[in-house]
Image 1 (cartoon, rainbow, N blue to C red):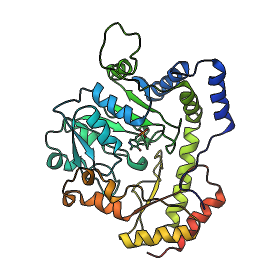
Image 2: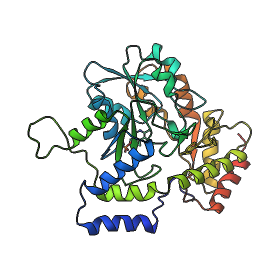
Image 3: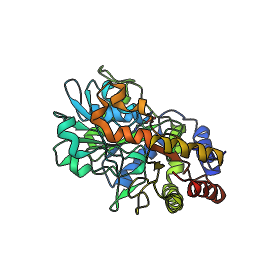
Image 4: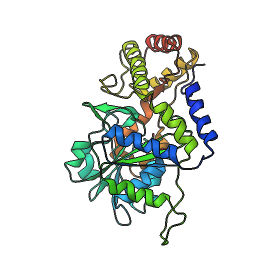
Length: 350
Ligand SMILES: *Cc1c(COP(=O)(O)O)cnc(C)c1O
């Protein structure tokens, strides 16, 4: 069976971890600082704060930007529950918004109807697609870009994450680069990351404030930094696989718009089937051909379902949950495995 996801840890990644272990310092230290510097360099300034997870990064980005009790934070309902957890951790109130069928990203035009009174918004660059940040900024919103699935992607030449008030990354095991767990906040506004850094550093402070241990270890940072040096190659390989799948896509099936655009990170190749029955048919067909596919977000996982809001207001997200299937697209796939997936896809009749 070709697995939906597979780790790609190279000898140089192991060597990077070994170097940290040999250094005698494995907690948050110089390797974390190096990773943070890398983000500041790549974004051409600002400041960064590495953390224990993407969820911790979402929480601290919101908190550092001033979100708290009484604030409404708009979230796409087609997203993982980490977003809800982060908003509640910050003490704010979530308000859910539907997404666009073309990109699976938050629909900026739905903001005024679905999240009136929102001061904050967390658009997700879903599966590497490019959420419309300018349309949200023009509404006067404070924007935390969720780049957990788009790290290394660019939009019109600029790195994704540079357009909002803060950008959040995850290094969980299934993400584009990984430390097992891990997260990071980057912001052009230095005070945002400084507030996050203050919060994660609770020990030996001269005055007590409510802080918390959300630190990344140097072991994680060493592993992440090593993979970061290959990010351009990872993006190119994923893009090449996406092109192959796109050419094999039978009539009646589609995928996210712009998946093979220049600079776009293809974190997932998600097929959109015409009906739930066709999606289930595709899943069975691919499994019979030895390809493990996954439903990326099931209907019950949609955030409005968790919050028991009326599904009628979230028709695009409902449709995506019922009709999408994610194919293996990780860079560890061999050329032969890519052909097996593409051929199986090509042979499917919806
Ligand atoms: C993975 C992910 C998160 C959460 O990151 P963790 O590191 O697992 O806490 C948040 N948002 C998106 C879009 C993600 O893909």
